[in-house]
Image 1: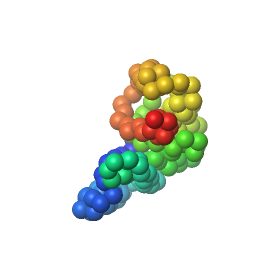
Image 2 (image 1 turned 120 degrees about the vertical axis):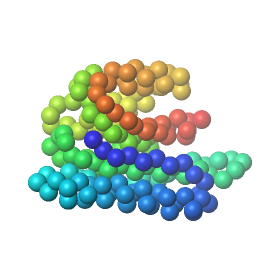
Image 3 (image 1 turned 30 degrees about the vertical axis):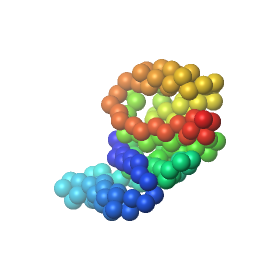
Image 4 (image 1 turned 45 degrees about the horizontal axis):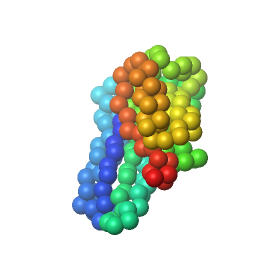
Length: 160
């Protein structure tokens, strides 16, 4: 499981930046506190990262989106950093969960990356916003297991 944070703000919202920084620090420290309480296990974040993007607005200030993901490596051969960002179109996924069934994830794979790959396929198959929404929901409803996520469909914003 992972820790995820998401924030939407106008770039002039500097006072909120303090809150964001504090939340990032607290999430990182959570692993150190757990480590102190149970020194026989390494339960801290295996990796953490932040991704920021801006949505241009025509008649008002641009909107800044901040995505933060802390990963506790439980599955797969290597640690996969979050947020997951599509190099092809800028879609973003931050994932906190485990996929037990519904989407095939083998023991050598990271479930968040497998889900992002599925969502990218959905994005490329979509001919309109409604088609994308329907395919997205069909993908998500198949997942069995606990999860929370934030998904930003950037390619839809650019295509508007």
